[in-house]
Length: 98
Image (cartoon, rainbow, N blue to C red; front, side, top):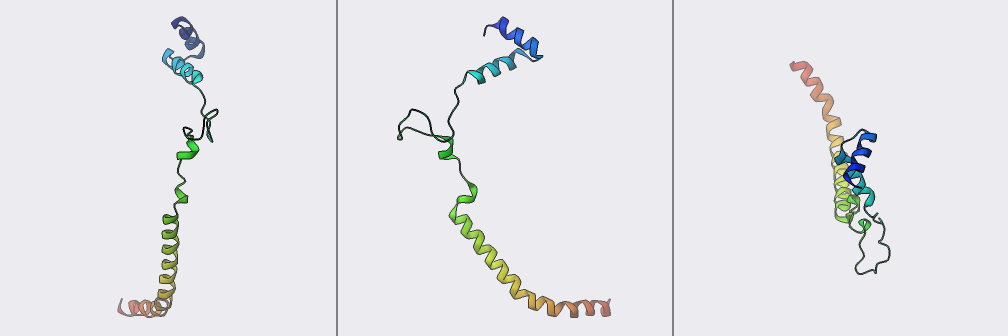
């Protein structure tokens, strides 16, 4: 587009000429395949799906989370008996002393 065309489109759309130039640049660019590029061999091919990381897929983090959850449950189970038996005495003693 030449400057006159850009200005005319900008006026019709009610936007700045710079915005029209940006839109034109976006429309002129080629689309990229997400899964695999077209017409390329496997050695030079790249695609966003090949380098986007799934944060939940790290086996070390999954194992750590499972171990943490298991340890937390054991800790709560072990302390439940103690805390239940001591709660009434602590509550009663706070009433007597308070």
